[in-house]
Length: 88
Image 1 (cartoon, rainbow, N blue to C red):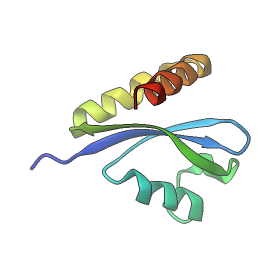
Image 2 (cartoon, rainbow, N blue to C red):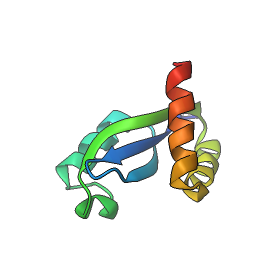
Image 3 (cartoon, rainbow, N blue to C red):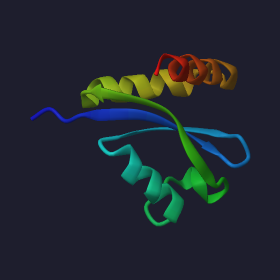
């Protein structure tokens, strides 16, 4: 059974970017907001909004894409977000 995975980026209130993978990015964002099941990253940075979403990937491709994005500089990530949002 192939699931529909998404790679997402969340911007924090202080401007940091967090990259993650989930089958339900909205649920995951709410978990990050609640602080209960969210990533340790959000203990020191409050999530603001999902700024990038790439859907329709299988688990393997999503994890590889997450690694690619995490290796990018912040400037490259901001360009990716801008380009992605102008296509939508």
